[in-house]
Image: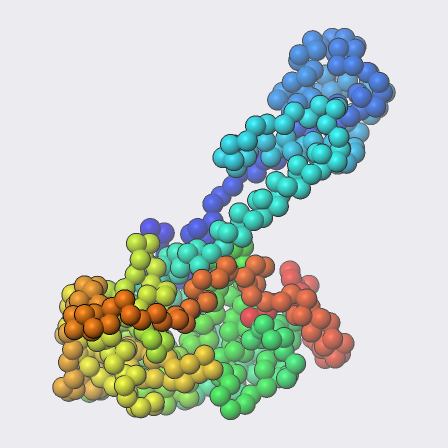
Length: 519
């Protein structure tokens, strides 16, 4: 298992990416490119292998090894070869291939020497003078297309679920508490003079200005994005606030989080997910500051009256944000282990975290995305109640007994529940612990809730053909690109259209490493 980063961060994080050794030499001399270039110059002068070898005092076989990149010649031999060919040594050592044919030969030879080519189980192709340039071009092109197709197939939901499973392991190892992210949030809050209570939009704007950015609301954001950051002109574009829209403060803080935390364009999907976790944590740490929330939670624990709804109301955030933040602080500061879930109305898990021993449904890799929660758990039972009314329940499971509280919300994607739970022994600190609702879950035993009762099976099994509502997000190939799912053309055009106005009010800054970022 990958251990947590010692800096109190999730990054650097590449749990699934393989470190592929470079095929280029470390001393700057590429024997294969050198050899193919030498062959090109020899043939261009009408010399046979034996004729050039004789001029420099080598055997034809020794020179063949040099031309095939299997032996690196000494500098004295290179000088003699260059002299025999009537050219400077520097030209012979030039890194750029002397012709398109030479470049293709170098590329194809590297392909044939790779482990990936061997795995295909196809014979090698000899690159003699009789092999047409067009055929060589086609071979290289087909292999590159095959490699791209393999990489796309690798970017499957299984890859994403494995990355999420590794993220959860890292989060669990540190009780979902990251001191470096807390420190960054606190430094910025002190810089803008925050004291207590909900962080206002004006304070978020001051925080953005403190790190050199302006917040601009627009109704023209690309449909594939939540925000767009113009790194060149230091502007964060946000959607226009409206009924049912996301909290603009959180969106702005997430976009600024990339800058504050020094994120680079993600190298793979796993790093993309880790960055998303970090900016969400950072935004929550600003909206619900550790220095004010922890004393409130400790006081509530003393009174045996801890409530996620109180956090939501005290800091004017969503119930989900408050629940997430509770998982950051509960174990670290209250010594209360906890679990969290967000599931759809049909019981499918979208988000989850635990460090209290509860066993979520999962596959053999530890992935839980797409798994269905037992219908007797609090997170499912709450759907039988009204929205905006919390529901508490004790549930006896195979891994122990737990007290949970849950609330439902309606979104454009349907109805969801957000639940927070603790082991039975920790329920004494929670508001709603006096509930009389109790259920027993036998899952993953099919007889618990996934297998229909015997009388229903007897009367109806084999006589029904349902048309399933597929969860397409669990089946589709992961979107390609540096920022998965983002339409690059749409985003770049948006930034270009707004760049003139942004530049007129941009502050002087150092040149950024990338000129835009989309979320």
